[in-house]
Image 1 (cartoon, rainbow, N blue to C red):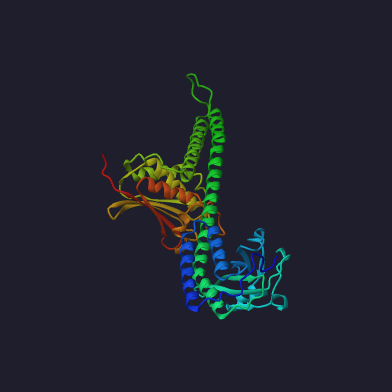
Image 2: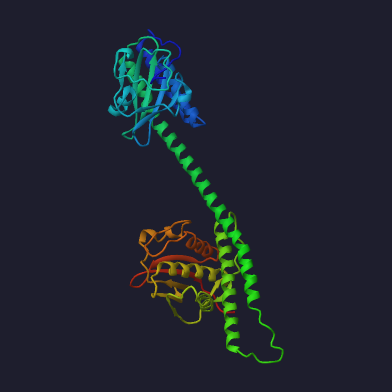
Length: 430
């Protein structure tokens, strides 16, 4: 093929009165605008563009090239005379050939005889069996940005007139915005489809992995229960009561962590589940008791850090204690990952603005202001030299907070580090 191709012979002139031609041109522009804006698909829009342009200029072929997003090549987007297989494949370098030069200069170009004009570029892969005699190219410019190039070509020699150039420029000016907006919409739809597919794949992978964790957790639970079995004393005292108590303590701690892993799996599954979640069990809850219980369960995780509990007065909040404990677990895990060893992780609770607020603070690198909302998005990870996150823990914590009518946000800690705050509605003890 070429930058051109082959259809019915072009008509050299119409012999009509200028006023009649101008009226026809206006009618044509109105028709093209109406058809272009009502096209149901991107392909239909481009086909309308080239078909109506060929007929309006009484040419043999019309072709539309669009500038690639990297601005290095123009790609054939539509044609009614060239090999249609080359749509999306045939490319003209920016600044090369007639099409590339028009894009670079942003000025129309008339080639009365392409056989003797060295600016004409034969595009590899395009049928050259039939020879094109003359060519007119105009740029499509929208918002001072080159969009593409619109070409018309004839099989018979033709001297395109200034009226022809003005007519094709009017068509190009009309179509530039329509084509570019349609192209942007198509690209946005493609990106949305890709992102949806990625999210679905991630959710499916996480759901599968967390589901598969159930079996090893059940096995660990069973073996832990077997290891905890002690022979009955049968009316006699233990010869090593301290050892028995220590083993019993290890058993309880291990089972607490197994239960915690079960809750963590439930939390991750809930964070990717489509549809509504089961309603929370909201009732007046002793906030301090839940915080202390969560801190006690997480003691093995906090072995390399100092836990500081700033206990306040006894406060009750309207919440789901199980989900609140899960939120605290996510926040403490996050603090442990990012805070250096031998630093303090502080938990506190107090009344503020008519509600109960729980704080989880660390002495880590802190979180820049522009990241304080992004960290709650799924799979958002802010890499540091201290740790890498999976991007799901804080997202799950925010989802859990929303499910119990709480607010969760991040703010700077006193001095340095990050502080996460859970705001709960206060409740009277009953």
